[in-house]
Image (cartoon, rainbow, N blue to C red; front, side):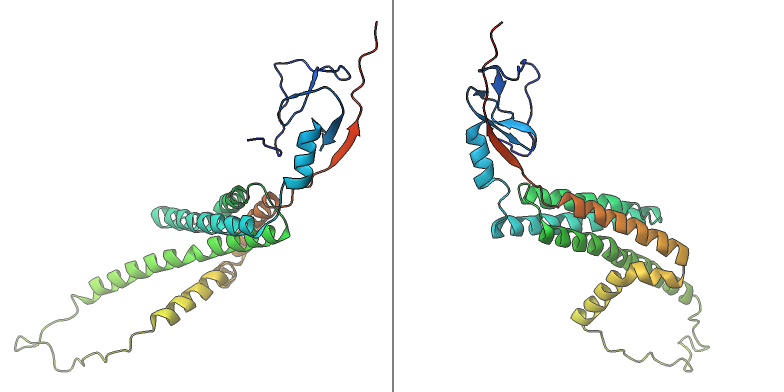
Length: 245
């Protein structure tokens, strides 16, 4: 399959500009005997030039859907890796946002087969932000579970039995609390997770500012990687025969 995005000149074969039969198309590697074109500065045969003008980087609905699917998977993977590292090491490194941005951008451009554009960039930025910010949710759940376990261990010795071997009558039975709605709790967690880069300002303003700057750079990675790849085709040019000596 011809890769129009990455022309690769044949370094093992000498190319003599202006000599018929010596120049090669840098996309299909076939000799150019007649007229030729320039595609983003690379020499192209008429066939490849026509294909590029008609087929390269078509922004279709299918390409966009594939890019979104690949980007969502990459965002989930990036969120898991980000949160896992924070839980295992106890260290939250903002620079991981750069890796998440690159991962999302690479996945989307792979899913679209090289197609980019403004709507791809917007989706990549949103997915990068969502992946990094919601990584706080599993971290919160982990530490909340540890805190609850610690509280239970501290409360266990204090429950001393009464003189008759039973618990003291003065201890009131805990009132049953209504169980929170799962969807409501999940929605609350999601909102808090998305706002987590800004919530940190309440406890560590300087660290929160640094984290936001790094997150912005990570989103820039995703934005640039999913940008449109402009194609400029010029020609035809005449491949003149070499003047006789």
